[in-house]
Length: 247
Image (cartoon, rainbow, N blue to C red; front, side):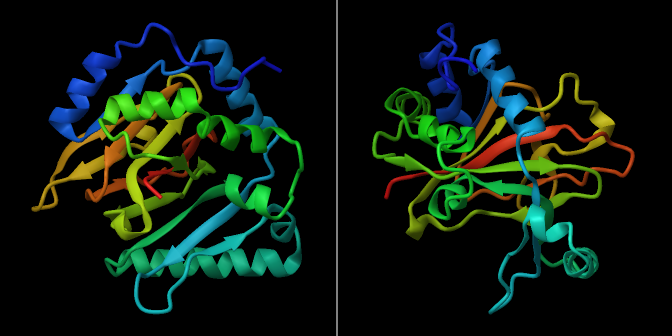
């Protein structure tokens, strides 16, 4: 294993990146980590992560996200639950309501519930909150008040998506949403999975291709989505996602 899982690329021009973020309120920082570091993390996500699934079907009162962990998914009851949740998220999205489904392994829950004490996923969250990485984020975003990051490992595979939403939980301390990409090399345009941003009329005004070793960040709230991944796409859109917070 690499000595450090988040070895920052020393060639980054932080001043230029900060100017870009100030103009657009969002950015894709390419080659954010050293190649060796990024490949190590991709290996953890691809080969050493017991993927569950996250779902949400609608956004009304009492509608909460649902999880099916990897062990549960292997049971007959878990398979039945998955079929129901796939159907519910299809129906919600068809009706124009908020919905999502994607592969998930919560780094926060892994620590809180002791899924694998001392394992590499705990290190991933630790490095996200290390001073060097937080300082990089503060410099680029111009937000010195950022104090911590949460995180989940995500895998958008065939038939996965994240519908349009804004990440409006500013009162809870969410300031910067992020996607740290460890996608397979040469992700194709037709495979979906792009992080896209919308204007008030619903037109896409910018989109970030899933790109290996790229850090997407944007100030919340902003209208955005992750495009549907079609059935013919390969499994390979790995990422760590979450929010940098001021509390």
